[in-house]
Amino acid sequence: MSEFDHEHSGDTSVADPIVTTKTAPKPQEHAENETETRRQPPYNVIILNDEEHTFDYVIELLCKLFRHSLATAQELTWRIHLTGRAVVLTTHKELAELKRDQVLSYGPDPRMSVSKGPLDCFIEPAPGG
Image 1: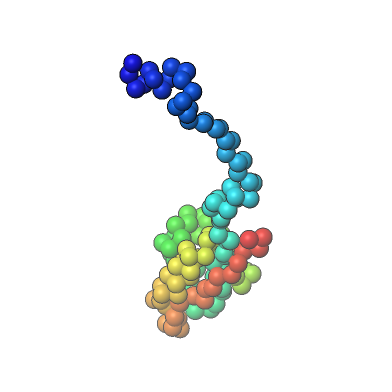
Image 2: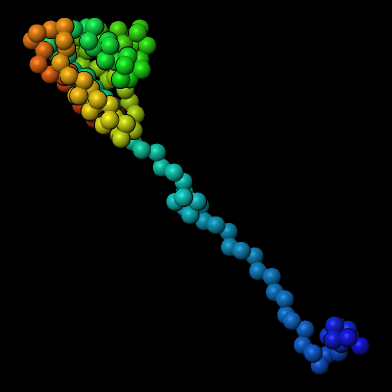
């Protein structure tokens, strides 16, 4: 008789291994939520009106830096002019900071001799974020 036959022949002198089954605990709800990606709160990029930049400058800037269409850039430029400010982009904080920095480094309006620097631009948390 082989060793295998001996172990499984019903001979009780050799202990059969004890097999137990255990059900894995059910994951808790909060454990799943901890691994979910959390969205960053949105930030607004805001441009302020001034008398040192032409409409053409602002429209150009909005098209180049923010990739707005001409129609959207014109609408935003009018909003900046009429209300003193406009939200030109709502995005996550890192991109908002980058866009603000790009506006601030865009420089003065070459079309106006009184233009000595960039448009005023800042970011703030978007409402409801």
